[in-house]
Length: 152
Length: 152
DNA sequence: GCGCAACTGCGAACGAGTCGCAAGAGCCAA
DNA sequence: TTGGCTCTTGCGACTCGTTCGCAGTTGCGC
Ligand SMILES: [Zn+2]
Ligand SMILES: [Zn+2]
Ligand SMILES: [Zn+2]
Ligand SMILES: [Zn+2]
Image (cartoon, rainbow over all chains, first blue to last red; front, side):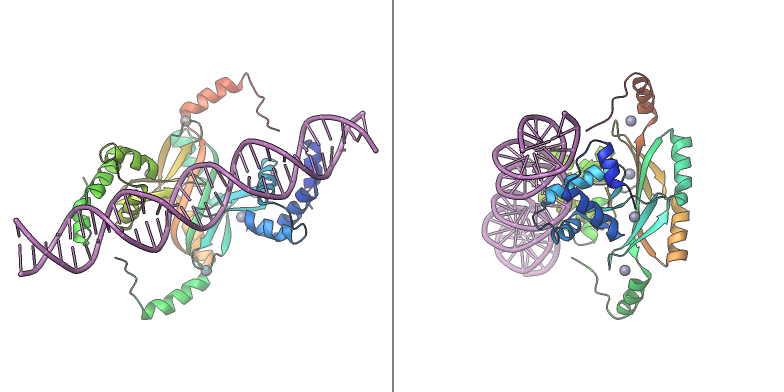
């Protein structure tokens, strides 16, 4: 288990029931959750916890490197307990499935930016959008019949 | 120069002053601009053009592959006249400079997703955040003296 | 236990983007 | 040239994720 509580205390932050609970929810979720999802889950125990508290706490946890935030295009940010190795995401535009792949695959990018452009890479955000295996099957089946996918 | 007008007409879309102007602004900008920036520039000529028209037109131009839209984490989308080969961006968090790098560097990612995960990649969004060469120099100079960068 | 700064809840505000609708205007055909 | 059909536009209201200010509450060092 992470030492979120310890880290908070060490840094001089107060240990409140809200923070405790938000951390636990996040840790037990074991997947990518939005702030709203966290709030919903948290409220099953503490019904009066406000979204702003959730946002503030998530921001705090992120600043302490206990949680990582991933913003994918346009939609809500996703939060997850800091995973050991840096990773990136691929998201199925059909069913919403989120998958991971390692940062190592981006080595050529790091290289190019560093060597050719003298750019000091802070973080790289990569999100691949597409269709997961399951949805691809469905798509194929459906696509065989209908193809009126044009919009005026 | 692109044939936006021709393309529009060919596809049966009407050629309105708004669309014309929005296209010109985008083409003459020669860089990444947000919808709001486009709107502001457009209104210097046609003061009554509404944001929704700008959004609708940008969406249309994107659908015709005349313009590409790039969403970077959290902030507004930015638009640019379609560049020849697919490319991605690196953004200086200090001065806002935006650079490009080719899609080829992501080949390993494409491979991994396709082969290992059976994922049909639609598009990949990559944005590297960091410091450009120029800002790195400044940073170094400043960093030597002050280092009270902690927030409570 | 006390007190005060840190924290929370609340509600209002934000900013990007979308939508429905009625008025306006391309474009084609006559 | 003139209809006039339909695509477009402007407008205003709305959404949704997120942030903010403030007044009231509470953790925690004393
Ligand atoms: Zn799927
Ligand atoms: Zn993840
Ligand atoms: Zn810079
Ligand atoms: Zn670009």
